[in-house]
Image (cartoon, rainbow, N blue to C red):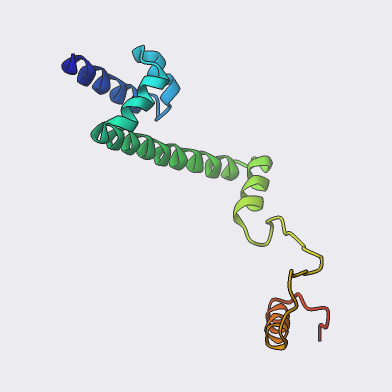
Length: 131
């Protein structure tokens, strides 16, 4: 019985590599339920480590592949890819968030705390007294 489990675990680990780390696909290809896969991960430290290593490695490979493809499309003049790249990676084109509001506390601040807070806001460019 233990030999069957080890054999099935080996099969699903191999399927996990072939499916680029997709647990659902690996389970479907081996006939092992996702529930069983996760029970094995929770109960078997060796299996958990091997499965986690495979999924992490496959994710890195897929990230590298996607990144390369994105750059290839940008070089080919794909404007959508260029815009995506700039909005997600280039500091000058990223979305910026502006915050506005008041700070309320549940207790009165001491004079030292007020001075420290004022300094912090001025340092961060968030002070009302700009200047």
